[in-house]
Image (cartoon, rainbow, N blue to C red):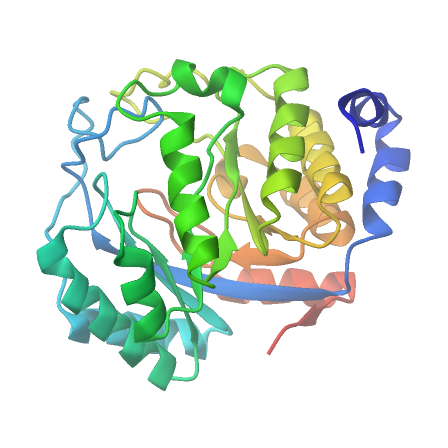
Length: 302
């Protein structure tokens, strides 16, 4: 599907657009969850991020947690219906000295019957293979935005740096979770570019984040950069352009969408949900999400 076609679809009456997206949307929704295993003091200058050392956001910070803490939170996630569980850390990428602990965490998550996931930044040569050998099922690494807008959101790494890690993950035979954050000042055309670039990457899962402006970051006043209708339109376009990928609600849905519009998205184009709280913001309880699935006649993936 080309850019012009997607732009034309984007402009359709909303109900028609959602109906087209629904044609490729399964009636089953997958839950995943995460632990912020290291929070804050990040060396990267991403303008949307509360964890960057470049900005004064006053969030609580902590170093890499022990494996026992990861397992405790993973067990709680499984009890809440999650089938996947992610280790998420701040920072440019994993230090060599931390790799054995990440591998230990992965093995323990898998033992619980959960599918392990890691979101630990840019990878160096050999690190993806180490994670694969430890049993890592899926690696999360967003493009965050399209190539044409990437320099507007950070100056400390490039779009190609992100593609390099994606390449390493795929070459190691690890599944890929790769998505974006919308509402960061990009144009409609650039949202379509994101959808197309993801269709070239072909990730198994596409996390769909909506910017939650954080006080102290350069994007703290960006709450008006996208409205609810355009959030829905973008989610639909992502699903249409990526029919074989799970489009997954991630950060920002509670802050940026009404309950009615969240339900519209889940009904028509969302097949995965990151449940519970996020890295530095509060999410929706698993009980609320399960109630929504029942209301919509959707099945929970087990």
